[in-house]
Amino acid sequence: MSESREGRFIVMFLRSCLHQTFWGFVLDLEDLQAIKYGSLVSIVGIPSSFQMPNPGNFRSAQWRNTDTIQSRSFICGYCGDKISSEKGYLIVDAHSTPRGGIYLCPGCFGPTFFTPFEWNQIPGTSFGNTVAHVPNELNQLYQEARSCTSNANYTASVLVCRKMLMNIAVEQKAAEGLKFIEYVDYLSEKGFVPPNGKQWVDHIRKKGNEANHEIALMKDKDAKELIIFIEMLLKFIYEFPNLIPQQQPG
Image (cartoon, rainbow, N blue to C red):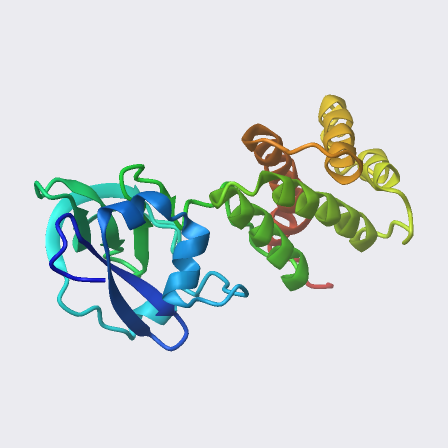
């Protein structure tokens, strides 16, 4: 691809977060209008097993030849902070009008890509809040459900939430091998759902079954409602009890 072609764009993107290796490549206007994120990933060479890197990975790396660009405010998809960034690499058209680019977080130095013309943020922002004192494997599922929402994978998020509810119930002494509905009922009957939460329980039953048994794509609202419900359960079961120091036997 010739760099002299009119309307060319230079896009810098991360190839390997774990090894801090960065590659540059040139795309013209037609290429950028045609590609989606999945093909961009394959062009750069990020493997299909790519996972969100730890924000700390970027602090020991150095981005070379960054520009001072038009400032943009957003929530960083790596560290979760609300930031305003003016360092990175812009994508411009033939008239030097910004059409997208990469912005570097001033806190964790993670690169956020804004797609050409659409300005869609990659990685997006995970819905929900972190919860303290959650068992490691359960917390990984919770973070996975949240991460799915940042990439608009709402059906996947609902299915992970469904699995989480079953795992939470088993952690709280429910028998293994029960049906999903039975686990939801167990959590309700054992007092893990607020007294006025019956409508929530009925709603969770319905959405959990829809995602698992029917060919129906879940929407943004479906995934976010489930994450809100699970965040409440996690706080109630794991975080709140640990906020008060346990009394030592007298």
